[in-house]
Image 1 (tube, rainbow, N blue to C red):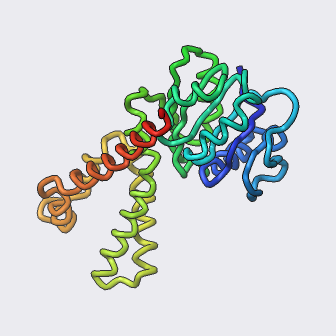
Image 2 (cartoon, rainbow, N blue to C red):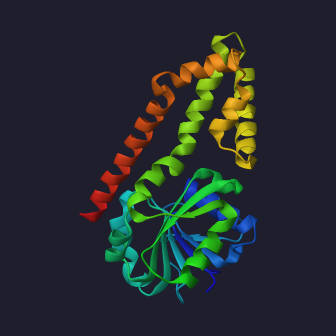
Length: 266
């Protein structure tokens, strides 16, 4: 099984990032993709976009990439037309496989949770399906591979993965801003502090991904006894301050995903 012909329903920031990377990497040909949007967007040359699904045979896969709140409207308009599509792939946060399967009749229904760095091939894509079809799973994983790290996730963990990896870039952007602001508080010019913070996070992330030890050990290697790094880590580590903050952050996002899932079940 190979996914070469795709229809996308919705193509906003995330869907567009995925599409551009697929075409840039040669995973999909531009003229093999049709996009249904409520209004035209700037898409790669050769991609067709319209307000309705194209005529003719069904594609290899349909990607649902609109807002989760539009699910029922999209199902009412397109479910009959899409009946029998081999693969229905949803990137809708908080919408479970069962909720999708009730609305669409497809050979296989899969959930995917990408994050925004998929647009440069450095993202994370979590996948889940109850369908025991190795060929379909391989085809979807192959489609997603150019986007970054691909992980199969248990259904019960999907909300947590969505919070960690899907929302994680936004949390990191806040951290970068805070790191830069802390530099400004110590007298650095704002533009310079932001450049330094961005470069520091980029380099540290690349080093951590290539290291043969975990990030915690890397932090210890940077921090010499009694040194300035150790003094800063003492603040972050006091009463587990950073871990507590991030645990609460991920928990809040996870709860929100679970609430959206409950709404989609109704």
